[in-house]
Length: 327
Image (cartoon, rainbow, N blue to C red):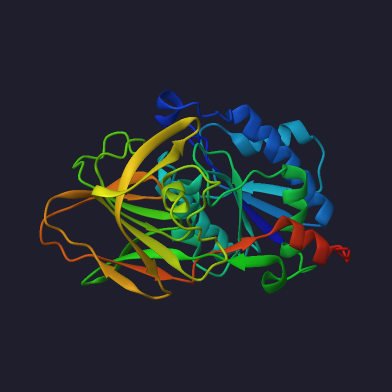
């Protein structure tokens, strides 16, 4: 039976950057409308079952109401729900166990980080942007996104043809891997988590990037103003901040530019490890959100790996799955 999973995050796009920048907001009503179009695309591709993450806003149930009659079997996962990112992780793990051929996410970079923690590297993701700062996830029309995910799940195209492999930053301590970032891992001297999103740069100490694109918004844009590193490039970038360095002005959020001084730039090779110098207490931010405190002397290192999530390319999937040819 062909199956697709949907993780729709009702909290995406609702962090503090709505207040400090000119960030747009995708309402849960619009997420339901997008999901309804997504389901129609899956139906047209011949998908038989859709499993979705239950959440309090009822995005998927409302989408089904908008659709009316459908051949799809749309079912919630039977998992505990707490309202945090662990729901996405738990849902993704359950979807993989159930045998889905693709997981579609509605959210931002943080949502996809949480999903990847549960899904692992084998089942492809199709990230649809509904967050504030989005680099890993992109804007997609639900109709064609659903069609592409369905073509993959039903076997009309395959992972190697329709997907690209993303990089990932692994955080290690002496016991092994302890966390990850799909786009950026930042070290900041602000020693509290509070509002998780980063929109100021005064406390930034180091920044590790899987991609650095001047056309992006967020921390990865800082690297993009120094050197462009695309998602397809095998390498990454490591920036160290300090006075008397190269000064760049980058968009940290929608309509929000900040200047920062970069004292050192290092290219990261695949599987290269960089130790963190813990000379003072710091906070680590993963994909733009502060999430972990670290103390003096703690042994941590960051490793760039090419074995991140497979990401479905809508155009490639439709071209291969429908037998069309690019001219």
